[in-house]
Image (cartoon, rainbow, N blue to C red; front, side):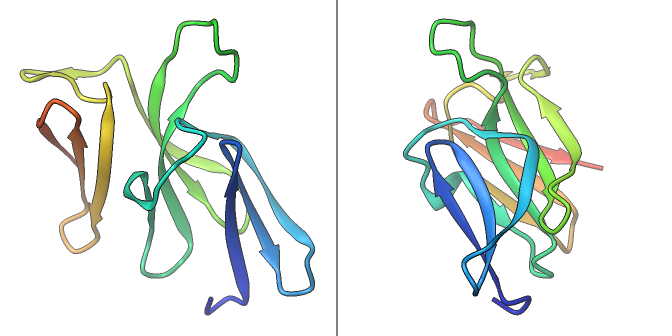
Length: 124
């Protein structure tokens, strides 16, 4: 809003548009995990410069699904960080059945909640 741009989410694709109806950003490696993604799986930073989303690594429905959480720069579309689905914690696979994510900018921590009721915290 402050940059006079807006994000759209359609068929797992994130796009950035200006108010003249022109697409201004093509995201690299940022395919949303669910086709009907709610805002529970997407975070926009307060500065509106990065998007953090629950993503998938393939669009092929029959291929094994690998989940990631991607951090992308909104204006350039460049993926600047990624948490891989293969990373595990004591509680199990952190990116299995993610239902919500939250980024605490003051603490620089990412909170990930799962369908199994697990909460994972990723910190720098």
